[in-house]
Length: 208
Image 1 (cartoon, helix red, strand yellow):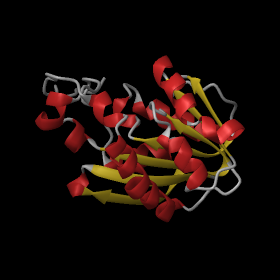
Image 2 (cartoon, rainbow, N blue to C red):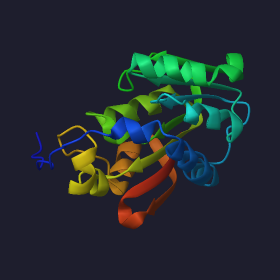
Image 3 (cartoon, rainbow, N blue to C red):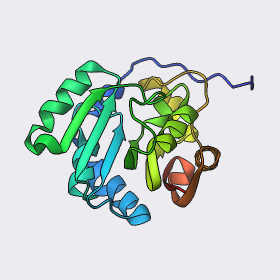
Image 4 (spheres, one colour):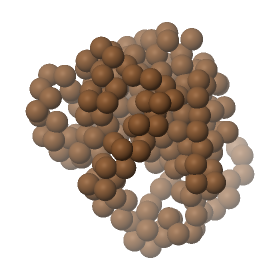
C-alpha cells in the first residue's frame, strides 16, 4: 500500500448545505455545465447517467436541457437524496429516472450509456479510481465521461477540511491523476481544463 499523508480535521460538516443549495445549482448550470459542453459537446438524443444526483437533481436536468439527452438516469447512495431528486424532476416525466446505487459497482450492463456525468463526485469516494473504471465500463464505444472536480489541493486544505467532511485517506484526484485514471480505465482524454491554480479541473474522456 502507498503511504498517504494525514489530512486536517473536520470540525463542522456543512457539506450538504452547499451541495444542495441554490447557489451551487447556479454555479453548476452557468459555469460547469457550460465548460463541459464546450470541451465535450452535446449528447443529443442520447441516454446518459449521472453519478451522485444530490437532492436537486440539477445534473440530470442539465443533461436534458443543456446537453440534449433524450433520457437521463441517475444514481445516489443516499435514499433521501433519491426521493428528493425524483420529486424535483417530476416535471420531466419518463425522461428521467433516479435510483439508489453505488458508483463503484453500477447496476448497469457494459456499454449502456452515451455519456456519464460526474459533478464533484470523485473526491467524495473512498475508491474514486473504481468509480472512473465503472464509468468507462458502462460507456458505449465513442461515449464520453464528463467530470468536474475539486482537486486534492483544495479538498485537503485546512480551510475546506474544517467545514466539510471527506474520506480521510488523502487520496483525492489531481488534474494529472484524474487524466491518468481515465487512461488506465481505457478512456482517451479529449480535453481538460484546470482553473484556480489547479484546485479545480474539468475533463472529458472518450471510450474508444
